[in-house]
Every structure is written in structure tokens, then in C-alpha cells.
Length: 444
Ligand code: PHE
Image (cartoon, rainbow, N blue to C red; front, side):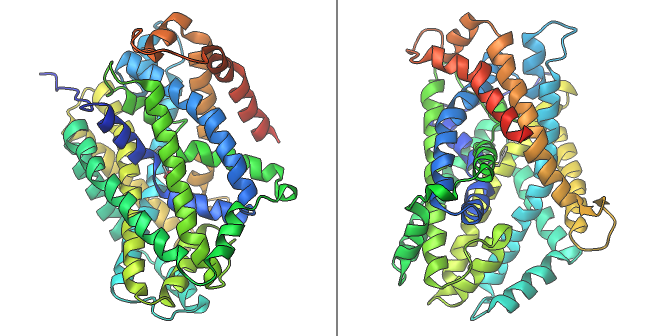
């Protein structure tokens, strides 16, 4: 018997789950450190331009394909093209990207659990940079502990995904996203009321145009796509669970707006504290794991705030790993014709194996490296720098040149229920401007 495909119960559920996917480590871990590395406000400005100009049309393109066909990454392209067409490879690339991303994402997600545990056991009290480095290096180079946490994260993710779209993904997102928001507000207030918090705000909001370089643009573009979960058919898959009555344009604006606000709030939570305690804002990927513990360690009730912060980070990561796993699971259900339960089992076992490899590649044992680079970094760079842009261009060109205008309009307006404004702008952004921008950025 064929299983019910399921779906979101309404627009609110669809938006919350998609926001759950978009808001993740990308917002709370990556955005602040990219901003710190790229000089602050200039990056922010370019980021906001990318999100508005590229993020919304790009997201709508994924929505159009997904909701039109009500199928996931691969099936959707197959159903819109002839038998011999190769467009479905975009979906295959999407599933592969999702799989590789979740394999290293789950490792960092596991770290957040370990740091939550360290916060609760008050391990950061009065630490200095030598001590936090020792904690971090000792932890990630270990064999079993990081793998244990990653395993736990896979299990939690699988438990949600196995319950299906409405009962699992939507229900959990509706509970976790408001909680995340509350925690963020609380942490922002804490950070903003620290002495000299305004230094951090200047760093964030005083644009110095001379600091904007080509690298700023590349980083902002890549980060905006990653943060909005674009380019790997994730929101395509989620939109296949949306209702015909959901307004796609409104939905995309909401997701983009909330994702950007959360990234901004994460920056407002982090930088005033970083400046207040005089630690390095441009620490890079280790900002959250090496720099912030120093801040927490020297703050009154630091263990409490540190625990809140890592709870927040784990929640953000969880709703994203859910969506990444769902891309893979929905593919297996449709293409291999298996039940959801079996699909989740297969997907999570494979993810755990690859996650273990990623984790071990950081432990310095030397295997699981490619030309001396740990597979963790290989997967991270390969997906963000190559697979996502290629997949993204594929999706855009497919919608722009392969689909019929009348079908696109029909989908965007939900069969004429809603007005479409700026259609010409949209279609030319999708057909030419965004693909050319992505190519240019990557050529240089
Ligand atoms: N957008 C998520 C984040 O910001 C990451 C992600 C990318 C999730 C692609 C799903 C698909 O962390």
C-alpha cells in the first residue's frame, strides 16, 4: 500500500518549518564569524543586498518546481521533463549536496551538545585563551566523544523526521522556533547591557566602504545562499508539502526576512559581548567555540548564559539537520519506493557513517584526508563553493528557460488567487542576472 505523502497543515506551519531549515548554524555560527572576518558593516550591507536581490527570486524558483509537482528533488525534475532529459541530475546533485552537508553539519551540531554539557559543568569559569584552546583542541581531536555527540544528534534528527512532515517536522518547528527566538532576545539584552557594548554595535553598523573587497562580495553571496538553504533542493522539497492556497511570494518574503533578522540578532548577541571583553572579533570559525567561552567565563552567571547560548545553537542546528535529512529521505521514499521508516533508517545510518568519517578526519590520525586536507573541510568547501552554485544555477536556468511562463505564473499566483507584481523583473533575474552573477563571482 502506498503511504500518505503528508504535508504542512497551512501557511504558518510551512513558514515555520522553512524558517527552521533556514535558521541554523549558518546564522548563529557562520554569519557572525564571516562578518567578523570581513570587517563588519560592509559585509552586512552586501549581505542584505544579496538576500533581497538573489535570495527571494532564487527561493521562489525552488518553490515553483516543488509545489507544482508535489515531488521531491529528483522526481520533480523528472515529472516536468521528457523521458530522456537530463535535468533531473540537478535533483541528484541536490540530494548528494544535502548528504555531504549533513555529514559535516552533524559533527558541528554534536559539538554544540558537548559545549552545552561543558557549560552546565561550569568548565568555562575564568578560562583564558590558552585554556579554551586546550579544551577545543583536546575535544575535536578525540575519537569517541565527538562521535558520540554526533550520533546523538543523528538519533534526535531521525526521531523527528520519522514522524513525518506534519506530525514531526512541522510540530517540532512550531515548538522550537519560538523558543529559539525567545532565547535570542534574552541573550541580546544581556549582551547589549554589558559595559562598552556600543563598541560592538559600531563594528556592526558603521559601514567603511573602503573595506569592501571582492572577497566580501563572494563571502556574502555564498553565505546568503547557504543561510537560506538554497541550491540543494531543500526548500524545493519543503514546498512540495505546501498547499495550493499558500501564497508563495509572501511565504518567501517571510522566510528571508526572519532568517536575516535572526542572523542580525545573532551578531548583536555576539559582537557587543566580544568587544566588551576585548576578545578578537575576527577569530573565524572558532569564534563560537573558542572566543565566546572566554566571554561567558568572565561574565556574572556565565555558566547560565553559556548554557542558554548552546541550547539556542543546538535548536538552530536541529531544525536544519531535520530539513537536510528530509531531502535525502524524501528522495529514498520516492525513488526507491521504500516506507518512511526504512528510508529514515537507511539515511541516518549513512549519515552517521559519513559523519564519523568527517569527525575522525579532524582528529589528526591522518586517514580520511584528501591531499592532506581533512574530509570535513573537503566536504564543507566542495559543497559550499562548487556543488551549491552549480545546483543553484541549474535550478534557476530550469525555471527560467525550461518551464513555461504560463505555468510559472500559475504557480506563483496559486492559480490566479494572488496578484504577481514585478514578474518581468523576477524572470530576468532568474534567467540571466543571478546565474551570471554566480558564475562571475566564482570565476574570479
Ligand atoms: N540554512 C542552514 C543554516 O543556516 C543550513 C542548510 C543549508 C540547511 C542547506 C538546509 C539546507 O545553517
